[in-house]
View 1 (cartoon, rainbow, N blue to C red):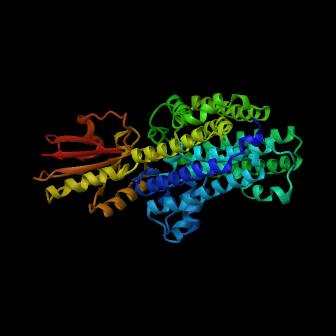
View 2: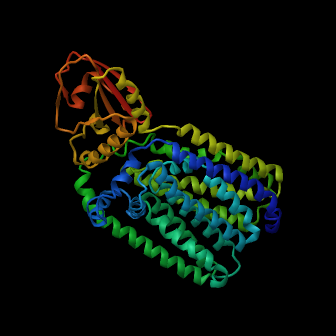
View 3: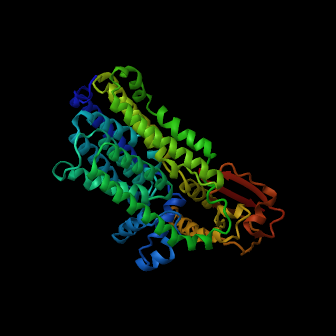
Length: 497
């Protein structure tokens, strides 16, 4: 099968893919609107507070972020025009990235029509991966990172397959978004900087090897600018980090699973979500041309190099979370699309691929959405409180169950927790009193229970009831009866006399 044959039936592929893409984007939008808020969402609100001046935000809040402040600037712009509702802000924030990604795929496909099937399949696979479904439901830069990284992989393929060097007339529209996407893929997230830097480097080497001098120059300029930006931002934020993270624990432990489990989930979870594409490696085996193998090798080498770097860094200090390594799933999707493009002319297989992509996305967002995260605890407390008019409701951060509750690292997140509790309290008709570290609470017995709301409690965290009241700072309750209820992301403590 030749390259022309791969894109030989664009109508069949286009109809199936367009329908599946519409379902996938609709499901992602529903996830953004229905998923309950989390600590990451409230961090973005805290970092983009419209009541504070931009200079104040930059010098007092953006500098504390554990990510580069580029998305903070975007979120601040949205907050200035009145978008402070987390669900709406998620949707408005992420939809431009979807449009950019789909537009990029169309432009690359038009520039190299014989490879149009790859760009279409890759876009569909990437948008329907579990990592993407999770990223779209969080008001952070995660989804933008994945989309810009995906465009990087499209550009890498273009450089590997194009017959001519950059020409403004032919390639100007591609460079207009592909080069900025390369810059953003490296500068939106410090974890993503590793993956984006690796792909930019291998793309640069491919351009040099193929004698594409103009693409080489453009990529070199973008790569140097991106790396310089990352270095500058790290040096700027490092002072705040040094002052805040006196205790390196808990904030990173909020992620579930070990490093090996996270990497395994991203590698094989991405494959299992749509194994139809992988079937192309066998059924289209006669169509494996040298160029297709070359792209698979290029992405495979980049994936191996990234995994090696990640594991080596993580061996020194625990840094790997699902969100900052989700680019692994995008690279796996690119390899899957390379195989899937070999059977693009087979209508049955392509319809099946599109159908599985749509179904897997719907299942993923249904399982994760519909009122999860902090909203789960708020809803339960809102149902408990009216049962006794004198019920007292308190809220503390998950740090209170950790030995580092009095650390500066914990103090850094206190205002973010308070913001979340107050906003959800207003939404659900409750008014929790925020308990701060070092401020013990002396309560007198009453006929109504005391409820303590705690978010960001890792599922693996073992809670010892005999020490719980002391950890929460509640005194004079030695004879109290304590009941614990686990929520999706936290814990509800009910204390009866």
